[in-house]
Image 1: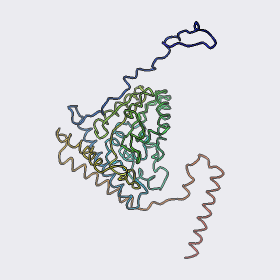
Image 2: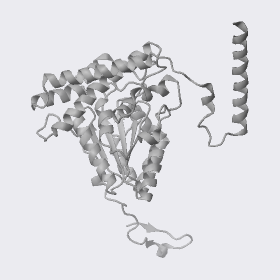
Image 3: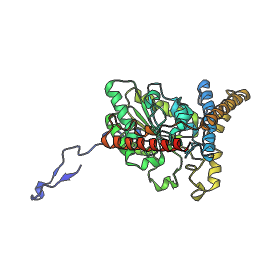
Image 4: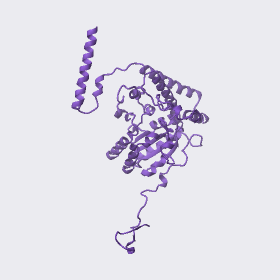
Length: 382
């Protein structure tokens, strides 16, 4: 019990503050994550065979997608590509736990999650190609725009989830972010609002070790990123991000909790970015090859494949079928991306405002005049 001194009074003026002076708003113990990342593979936990086989096929396709998209940057068909190689378990699980009416809020590295949710592989790369603002209709696919600013999608996810709850809609938002994004103000603001409003949103942090070249130890001194949840009054979960079965289970539990009105959850998946930050990054300047190779031994595809094979879920024919489907997808992606896009320069002025501003109309007219002048010159030279 504390005491309070009344200004200008003697010793007799000391009195105890009304008890209790302070109490926790919630019991913090149930909100704390486990001390070690949660794992399923390598244990005796029961597995849903159909789900595991679907996860495996999507992981194989996702690995091939990452490799093909990376190759397209080297061929000049993509301006940049942030690969999620090594993180496929997180990407695929995030897509598969959602129902059709739910929303996915990806970060710039989460093209694979969008594709696993059903987005056209080419449309997922349109922004990175530089052809269009987004490349797809977010409302049609229930996938927020892929964009490069860090963590800005998190408050949007909270707003959508809160609005859905107020309207009585059965909608959960799953917001993805990297460890670097947790250092942004948007991350903290989103978690605070989500917890206060008890919004049906799941925050999914893929801790891949580096914010470009900055290791996690230089971003936070917290025991884990999942521990940050208790400060906002929501549960924190820590999971092995390369264990596809564990990631799916933890995400599914959090989504189900949000759907039944339990509020938000913060999940940290411990994984690793095998490739460089993007094709413009030289990762050898801030990490050593032995570290990368150690994580290759903890590869999400190899872990799941070994587990399913040992349980008799996966045979050679199923492996071959998954590989062939992945190659078919990659071939189609190459063919479509090798075709030059037909772009209308006037699209620069579309979808900026519901009603074009005077300045935007002026710029549009100026561009029309310049294009018309170039066309006249070309026709005069023929």
